[in-house]
Length: 280
Image 1: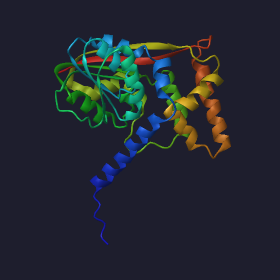
Image 2: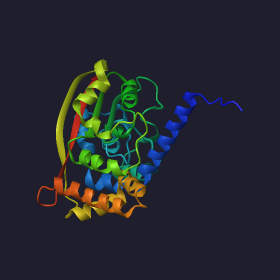
Image 3: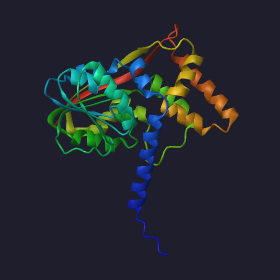
Image 4: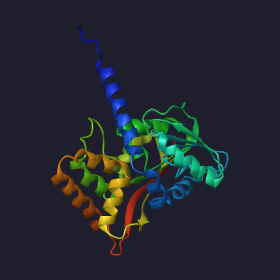
């Protein structure tokens, strides 16, 4: 029998499988707890930086549980919260209800957004779009759906900061990334993001800042929380589950990340890049 499968079909199937794994990964553990207990302040920070105004059409990409989408709705915007993992919307809707706001929750892939060109006044993403594996595709979509003169606002973990260190540490233990996938913390490198967006944006402003995390009194406490709560870490542990030595090494290495970033009182400063820009 002749194989009639085309390379395009193979590539599309591989991409679909990759996205399915990503959706599953972010549904593991308890990411809503990470979002609300550790980094809740990032949402209002990004809304303020984006200068979101009443009546504006806002798309929050990789919205998760609504850290940005809900504060944007509180600012009076017409908000769509889009995410590859709609299981996170349960917590997001509860968050929105507690805050007394209404917004739309829609499943969507950051690399193939289901919206027409020039649909939104503002597009945001808070430590979200950075996890799309193909950075240029995601950046192209980000620009495409924002009208000329509209705004983009992003918060991304930096390569040199805590989360960048964590992902570098987990890499030897995690399943190998597919061809073409890029490390998420690259979105926290100003030069990388400027290259992705190119001359399609203007008025680019950046700021490196930190969020203070004081939830863990010891590196061991941090490790236990992270291995039970955070999807990428859970996947890394599952990948070495049959190897006791590698599991022990991962335990030590993750505790080591917390030790390296401990300010001396059990707290850590997690570094991020805040970028805003205007679409040409």
